Structures are given as C-alpha cells and as structure tokens.
Length: 570
Image (tube, rainbow, N blue to C red; front, side, top):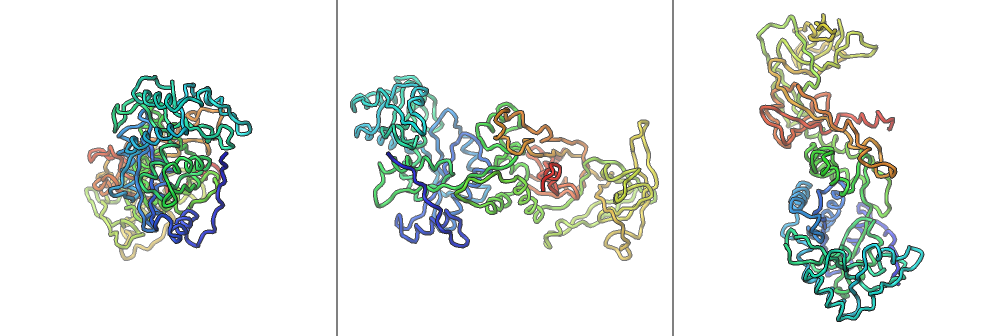
C-alpha cells in the first residue's frame, strides 16, 4: 500500500513564494547536478484561459528567475479531442504573455515508442495486464475511499497472453472500449489512483501528428511523469488537484529514474475567478453551440479573448503576481482584481481621445458658420512623452445625450437650460434652448459660447463645475462599439449545481451600439492592438474586424467598476 503524505509548506524566504523556495533549496543542495528545467504541458484540446496563464507565469517565470529552462510540451495523448488549431493558438498565447521556449518544443507523442516499450517491459515484469472489462465494470470494482476494491478476473493472466493481447490491441484487432492495459499495483490501496490504474486504451482515430500509426494511447498518469523524465525535467509544477496523483507519478517515474536524477512534482493552488467558468469542456460547449462568437470572443476567459478585448499581457501578469501562489485552495478571486490591474496598466499607456456613444447635436449659435479651429489635446497625461494631437472644433458638435437634462436634479453639473459647462480642451458654452421632434424628443440643443474661455489661452481661467467630452459634427467619423460585461450573471456559476450553466449567462454581456461619433484622430489610428481611453467613458481597442471605412471598437473595460457597485459590493 502506498500512502499519500503531502509535504508541509516550507518556510519561505522573503521575496520568494513557496515553489521558488523549493527550487532555490534544491539548487543550493546541488540536486540534479544543479540543473533547473521546468515545463508547461497543455493538452491541445482547446484554447488557454486565465487559469493557464497562472501556470505559464509559474512554469516559465521560475525558470527565468533561477537561470533555468522551461519546455513547452503538448500533452497530445487523446487524438479525438486535439487539433493543430489549438497547438497554434497555445504557441501564440504564450508568446504574447512574454515567454519563449526557444528550441524546446516537445510532444507527448514524441515518446510514444518509448512509452510503448516501457509498457511491454512492465508486462514482462508482471506489473501490468490486459483487462477485458468495460469501464463501468472497472469503476465498480475499484471500491470506495473507505472500502477496498476487488481484483479483476483478468488480473492473473500470464505474461505471454498479456503481451499477445497488447500487441493485438495496437494492431487494431479489437474495438474501442473492449480492452485496456492496467498497471498491477494494489486494489486495497488507500489512494484510489493506485487501484490498478489504466495505462493504455484503444482509440481508432487519426492523430494530428502520428496519423494512424497507433491504435493504443497512453493515459495521462502514465505518460506525464515519463515524458518529464525523457526531457530531463527537474521540477514538474502543477495545480493542487494533482496532489493525490503524485504518488502514482512517482511510482511510474521510478520505473525509469535512479538516484542520479528524478523529476519532482510540486503543486500550487489554481485560479478560480468570479463570474467565470474555467472548464474547457464548458467553454468548448459555449463555442460549439454559438453562445459566444468563438474561443477569442472578448467575453471568454481565454487568453485570446482577453487579448482581443484589449487586455494587456502586463496587466495579466501583474494580476497573477498579486494573487500569488499557495498550497491552500483559495476561495474565488474577484474578477474586479483582474479588472483593476487592467485599468491600472491602460491608464498608463492608453491614448486619450473623444468619442460620443449616444450623440445629440449641439449648435453653438454665436460661433462663426463655416469656421473650424484646431484645439490641442493631451495624448496621455500620465506620460510626459506622449505628446498631443489636434482636434477640430466647429459650430456644430455632438455631446452625450445623457449629459443634458431639461429638468436636472440638484448637483447635476452637466448641461441644462441656462447652465454652463466647459467643453474639454475648448470653450465654455451656455444652453439657450432646445429643438424637439413631434414626440417630444430632443433633436438639437442650442448654446452660445464664451470666446474668451478657450482652454489654454490667457484669460480662460473662468471656472465652471462641469466638463464634457464632445466631437465636431462636421468631422465626426461613424463607428460601432461593443460594450462587454461579465459573461455570467452569478458570482460562482460552477456552484449552481441545480442549474444548467448556460442558463446563468448574462443576457447583457454584449451590447452593440451603432452610430457612435469619433474624433478623426481615433479613427485614423484605429490599428489592431492600439489602446484608447475614450474620455469619460472607458478603455477601448479596435476589434479584429474593424476597417478604416467602418471602425469597430471593443470596450476593454469601463473607467470604474460599475458592476460591483450595482451588485452592492465594495
């Protein structure tokens, strides 16, 4: 019987998390000849999400910190679910986060011959056998955590029969699900993973790299540790759900390893984020059923979705660094912490500009007709080197419809009849009247301006309480914006066991608005990857399907966390 004795968290030196401390201690002790080699081993059966980003930052980050190397290894042991599209997407995501694996790109399929040979050796040594039972029968015989399992009726097969059957399994003679190869360990072990785990199953589906060469494929628990060993991985860092698997990892690895070198598995807490699901199965379901626009839909928690939405790699890495790594499975991390990191980074780098989302026209009646003047706008007040850009001002402008009220409440500091506001970067205007349609809707607002109040000019220091953003009507560029919000309407959709998770989708997670008015500077610079702050509205980035003829912008995030406020949260 093999017991699972989890090691205690070591005393951590200042500035190091517990994983880094383990690595530092191993290096100091000269283990593995002083080498450090980690790996990031995604299965190419979907796109990476924010939880994977935490693992990437750990696997690649600890290697960078201590002068080691990190491999990228694709765990491609299930050809039914895997695709080269996912391989390409994973590569792109890791590079975008700022990490590189140089020439150390590997695949579990690289080791299929060695893994098969090891399985044959274990059969010859009486450590594995072919079982003809169904998956349901095998599961029933495993027992429970408090009661031992029962031996398979095929457990005592001879070595010769097992070898013959295993070879025929790989030759394609048997149907999928009819036979498996199991390790012969201990059906009474307190660790359920040791109750004769499955090593190989029959899969008759072309593999994206090996084609139809194999009809048997190794299980994760058998392939993972051996692949680490073949690559020379010293520290196999994974999440806490693999703690019960660690003894089995070590059991299989020791079929190859000796005292000179043996990979070490270390576990840390995974990332759980509010208003989010991290299950790739559920995310794939959303994609396949058309409930989102694809893996890179900006509402998805995927790295590609966050990139398309306008999140920065630095913001994601800063967020992960702040939440840290422990050996205790934490409660949900508030998505607001991630959004705060995004706002913080975008505030420092985003170019400021004017856009009016819900426009109403303002006519400045005493401004000369046919006249256009240029006013200077700061590109980013947080960056002294960001410079300025020119913005046209004319007799007719657009402001936000919500920035005007005919009968305003107290402390309404925007535009109202006989009230004054400053147009950011330009003049103070005063409302003198409105024009309405037959239904009483305001079509135009009439104002006068104070010629001596232009921002930045001598004598322009007269103060008013409200400042509005605006766009010249003559020069405005029409655009579309997509306002994204949380994908789910409940804080922990995975905890709603009595409901289908699809029922918990937020119906307002995407709102598309047409007829948005942009200042020309934004439209002219609406290139993929550019970050903008639309003054007083939020942070935006051009979408991938944006064109110069019709700019389309995704709202990355609002200027403030209005969601938490609406939910009554701090």
